[in-house]
Length: 487
Ligand code: GLN
Image (cartoon, rainbow, N blue to C red; front, side, top):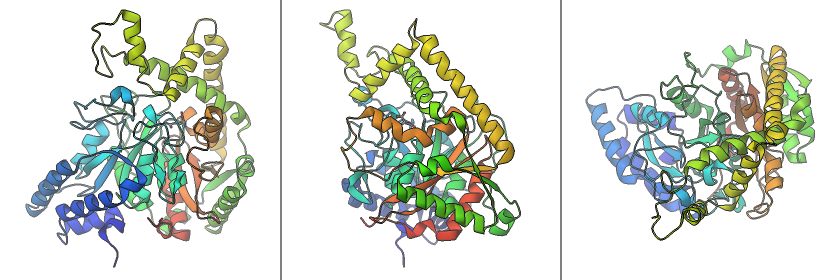
């Protein structure tokens, strides 16, 4: 018999609602599991164990009274440390915010709690979400549960590694240029970047507002869909959210097969990846073909300019967003006493790590008079053109398929001091952010040496249902749960 922490969330939640087990028992088991495993993985930045136990008792009480407790009843959820949870630290893995306690809940957090979910703690990340490996954290790097000497991917490394190592069944991450999908791929879990405007960003500490979205990570699509339904929706606190009915379904295979999805395969990207990554993508294409999907080759001609465009826009927005941490209004709490004006700000701003400083410099440069037209305006033009290319592709295809990452996970430290090499790894994930689309990373098997590989599916804005359907097919074809690390 499996341990409770190994089971999918939806199964445990059912047991809790049927009073087969109590929410309190389950949370206690999860806490024990985190204590046992996380010293190796380093996925949490802080815990909310007392709060979680209190919440679990309240849920048990409601269940006894016959009150409906919601879609996530009794399920612990970990939250990336840039998403606000009232009363908990919200550090963004930065020295700048090391003592900052959030005075309010992000909308997504309130929604999770309203649906019976239990916030279990905050999760490690690259500082302010800037990175691809979760090595740029003041809490130290997250380790890949498949091999503790390897990177877990980033920037939501804690969100993926905690779920992959069976500490928690669900987490939230944020994805500005791949930060949910990259670690999902490197850790063999499933992570979705929702369409821009479908999930509220209220309470997310901004890195690059026009690119980022909050999204969930799980071990199976059957756990991912309920939490996606919970967090999606219009929010008066975030003007970019779109009014729509968000009601994603877990359809049956028979129902999905009648839809005869047209899959556009981005072969250029498959060929440009490490051989085992390419092979894994081919295998997934074959499985979809066997299910009767229509497979066609396709390409995005302008994609070669995407990376440059992304890093200009992301750093420009970051430089503006991070200017508020001046140690007077926001940021590290010091005192200006004994300083003169300039040295006080220099001292304050030195609390940022090197990668963040690099991005602020880059972003300020591309926005400066004289260079604005040359870099920033041009990057925005490319962004619009890429969006138009996608519009054309989605007239022909329902879903685009490509690898999530061009490479397998690599050793910790291998690329830490090579920013450009790291930026290049984002080449397949940034496309969906630039165009505001939805994209999912799905486990695609293991390499010969036992490292996870992910395949990425991209769909048009608000077409999450297509990605979910395809994920159901792929999960059925092989069963993601067969890929669990021993730790
Ligand atoms: N690696 C990308 C970056 O550093 C994406 C990060 C993210 O999605 N937050 O910008």
